[in-house]
Image (cartoon, rainbow, N blue to C red; front, side):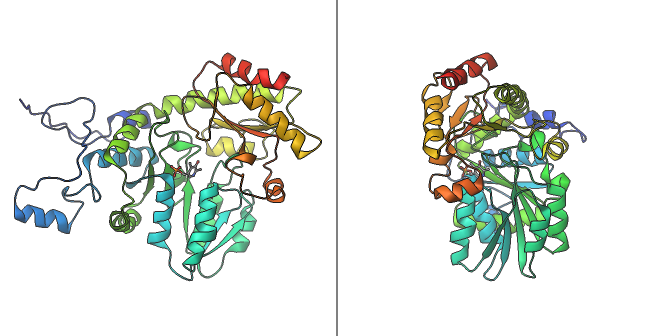
Length: 405
Ligand SMILES: *Cc1c(COP(=O)(O)O)cnc(C)c1O
């Protein structure tokens, strides 16, 4: 019992909120309203000629899910629409998206410029793993474009930025970095994990590629790992043969989950950002709190830039520090606060509808020496909050338990 269900193409000029729920692949013959999950590892070919054609051009027809799957295509098209990109390419995780960039775009002798305060695994890939293949990386100040400019060399191929950063929410100027990259004949890549396309569209600001961890806000309910790269058809066309050969492919099940997650991305990110701002203001008024790090607060060093670059919202992640006359004392205070929580979770993910509280110095930044951590500003008293959708009063009360003790 199949029925004709061909959908007409969407009219041009639709708003992002509409694209987030309406961009999709054609329906199957059953007329399902919610997109089907194509949980299959390969695809039956109608005849040998078609099979030969599909194998020769994987973008023409599906053959094997490492090279393409409709549920993965559905997620890619929807994310590309939200980022304002010609194409997106889904990967198994955020880190596999960054690995793909290195594999596909860099060669021995190339030079990369990154911020010093990036995601730990990204730092490791560039600083250690790509270095073994003869790619050199300079790590510079997150917030000072002059430092990026000064690091440019004739062999600079890539500038890689992440904004806002984890956990101190430092913001960099995407348009300024794009100008530096293009003047040097290099590409600018922006990790848009924290802001999401709801708040920030790096391609419109001049970036060449956007990378995502779909594990965070895009899924939004802490269920699956996923990643993606978005950009021009030309650049994504360079990446996709490498992703297919290397098997960096996203699983259809995970793609389907994240594809559905995108439908509520805007509502979630806006609500979680509004709550984060309220929470940041409240924390700033607490005598037991030393300092609050949140781009939505006027006290944030890049507040004006953040508001302009992020559509007037600060995002859903903030950090705050508790004082201590020694690192040990600050750590005891932070652990006490975290261990007093009854509602928020102790975990290291973010972008979930459940609020997550973490202690960066002993988790994401645990491998650094105390000196390196101090230099990075990640003190033992620092606590990160990835704000979810619980009632704000309950989050405040949960944090207050540990602040008062
Ligand atoms: C989590 C994260 C990543 C890595 O993504 P995975 O999906 O965990 O591989 C990269 N960048 C940022 C900013 C992240 O928060």
